[in-house]
Length: 261
Image (cartoon, rainbow, N blue to C red):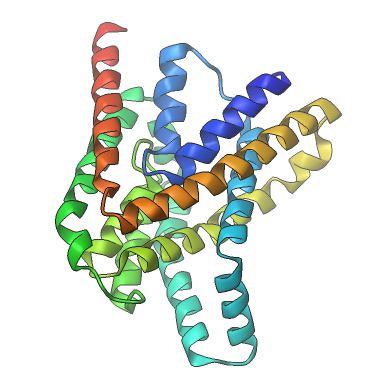
C-alpha cells in the first residue's frame, strides 16, 4: 500500500463511518466488485481510531461534562453513562458469542447488498418518526433497544449510525440527542478494538505505521466534516435521503452477484 491509497481509504472511512451508508458494506461490496484486498486489521483499526478521535473532538464538551459530573457523583451524568453501558452489552454479547458466524458474513457480498437495502428502509422510516421525536435523552428502555440495533449493525451493509439513530428516533429521542448517544456509544467499542491491536502495532514495520498514520489523519479530518453534515441533515429533516444512495448501491451489488459466479 502506498501513501495515496492510504489517504483514499482514510477519506472513505471518514465518510462512511459517520454518514448512514455503512462502512462495512462498502468494504465488502465495493472491495469484492473491484477485487481490492483488505488492507489488514491493523490499518482498519487505525482508520477507526481516526474516526474515534473525530467523535471525541466533536463531542468534547459533552464528554468533559459527563466525566466531571461522574467524578462529582452527579446523578444525571451517572445515569447517562449507565445507559451507554447498558447499550454496549448487546453488541458485546453478539460479537463475542457469534464471532465465527459474523466473520463468515463478511465473505459474502450478497449479505452486504441485502444489508444496504435494509439500511435504506430504516432511513426512509425517519420521514415519519423524526418530526415527532422530542425526548432530550434516551430512556433506559430506548438505550437497550438502541444497543440491539448496534448489535445488528455488526452485519455488513447495516449502517451503525443509521440503525442506532433510526431506532432512537422511533423511540421518541430528539434528533440531536439521538446522534449524540449513537456516536458516544461508539467510543467504548472502537477504543476496545484498538486496545486489542496494541501488540500488532508494536510489531509493525515503519512503512506500515506511516501508511496507518496517513490514513488515520485523513479519516479524522473527513470524519469531522461528515459528523457536522450528519447532525445538520438530522435537524433539517433530510436524513432519509441517504436511502436513495444505499438502495442504489445495494441493488447494484445484488445484480453484480447474479452476473459474477
